[in-house]
Image 1: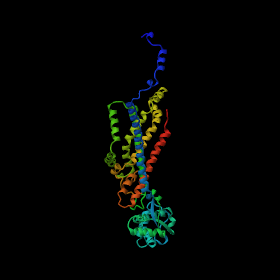
Image 2 (image 1 turned 30 degrees about the vertical axis):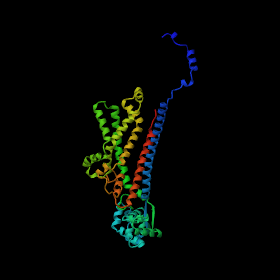
Image 3 (image 1 turned 90 degrees about the horizontal axis):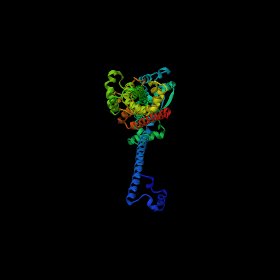
Image 4 (image 1 turned 90 degrees about the vertical axis):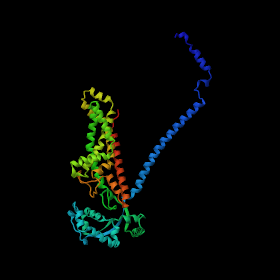
Length: 435
């Protein structure tokens, strides 16, 4: 088209200036107004729905934590009776060496320490003192003698755990007779409820007033160490090989699909695998942290591989190209440049997988870690239990005193999980590099 066919610019501007202003704006018909109002309403509803979902999630979390705290705060307390014991006249003997030996508790039991404690309790509390004291109260006396062997030659007043029935009576529960007895003893100053920090230092027992969580906590720590030592290096090396070196063919695709499927396999299947393989090879290590850690490592490894591959994919190709351009070998590119940048993502995935393994019960149930273990494990091959299994065992007890202890153990487990997640955030921020 020639330039002579176009209208002059001046005539166009004059026509626009002379036009009505309302004719130049957008057309806002009634139907348009309805559609616009509907769009705004849909956006407000979506925002409200999202905020409601967040509020509901927070409310559920607050309810869960609040319920655990209300029920579990009593698990860190116990009802205690004052009993004075004169060891000089009790017939129980020993020296600093024998009272601090590993077999000191068994030696004191054979010397009749449980009967001595019952005798002095009856002197202080009456003929039915045996029903008022926890059946494991004498173990507190044995522990005190181990801490201070000089007690064996003098008289000492102990705060010994009361029975579950008497503790319930102190809370206004149980039979009217026990409530009246608890009120009388509390008024006389012989019965009180105190913070039981020994709950964090003792192991399992038959009485809820004498149980502790340290044995299960130590078993969990040892099991998690075995899991980490086995799963992390194998998972990281597998992720590096599959992402950087493995040829892209059908076999690699098959391995990738298999790893993704393993990450979704129910945990009890790994328990069956540990039962069939590890316990067949090491039958004497049933319920040991070593077997538990090996079983949980099988379950955690696919999670580490998947998170590791995703972290490696997130490293920009320019990092690899720049390293190769200055003469780095492929191995140097991977270990000097790619791996340090992918490490925060790998560590985050590892801690998340470890946190999941920490809460597992089914695979450890199958390899025998549900046994009653009254002493903390000495090493990776000693019999042990873990926190989730201890919670499961206590929740199955009929004694009401175990209800508060179970909630207290859940609080300890949640604190452990929060510590692991906090460690993941710290490591991610510490090693993270931005480009």
